Image (tube, rainbow, N blue to C red):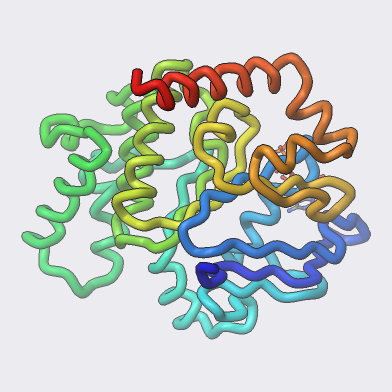
Amino acid sequence: MPPPIIQIRNLSTRFGQFVVHQDLNLEVRKGEILSLVGGSGSGKTTLLRQMLGLEQPAHGTVQVFGEDIHRASAAHLQALRNRWGMLFQHGALFSALTAFDNVAQPMRELRALPEDLIRDAVLLKLDMVGISPRDALKMPADLSGGMVKRVALARALALEPELLFLDEPTAGLDPDLSDSFVNLIRALHRELHLTVVMVTHDLDTLFELSTRVAVLAEKHVIANGTPEEVIAMPHPFVKEFFLGERGRRALDVLRNKKMDMDHGK
Ligand SMILES: Nc1ncnc2c1ncn2[C@@H]1O[C@H](COP(=O)(O)OP(=O)(O)OP(=O)(O)O)[C@@H](O)[C@H]1O
């Protein structure tokens, strides 16, 4: 079995008296694409923030790359942060910087790379996500929504991370753009041997990408398995989320695609 990249043990998260997570356990192994799903307010974004070291556990531990990130020194935490990339749902890019400079920024912050090397690396990252050198000089406001997401993905990949966090990666994209973004993530996952943790409400994205799904409800992970295993679980949230009309449609689309692939279409 591949080694664990993230290990969360008996995690509790509280905001004052309000308990978001209680005795939550979760593991993410190398090479997985794990989707976190759950109702609104179930604590998905807060769990991502725990994995990024942006929230403090009331109890329990969060290990990333084998290190307890809440016990790591500031310098050590920064070194760990350089090993992961994050694609935020909102505010993905600095509006005052060109696409190029947005991708260059994490490299420049290292203060270790010469500018000509940064230039080549930025153009390579932008090329990976299908952004031309001409578009690299544009400001975020002059790019389409799909292009902004691609530039933000290039930025998340700037330091060649082993681990990629995605918060609602296809939210706000129309179905065609969403499909092409999903294909891009799939290709990058394969080529760069990434481990991916994503939060998504979008069932098409979930079924297309996930190797494993973890369902958050009642303050902890109530279901954890392959998409097929999770769908078969009898929990009311699982039934409503996956087997409602929306879920059935997404599943049908996926099954048809798989059948087409099996028949070599
Ligand atoms: N900084 C904070 N202070 C107080 N309460 C917070 C804070 N951050 C989150 N919460 C609360 O914790 C709960 C979980 O929030 P979170 O954003 O993690 O949910 P979510 O599952 O990502 O929801 P959604 O799908 O709607 O984005 C919510 O009730 C939210 O109001």
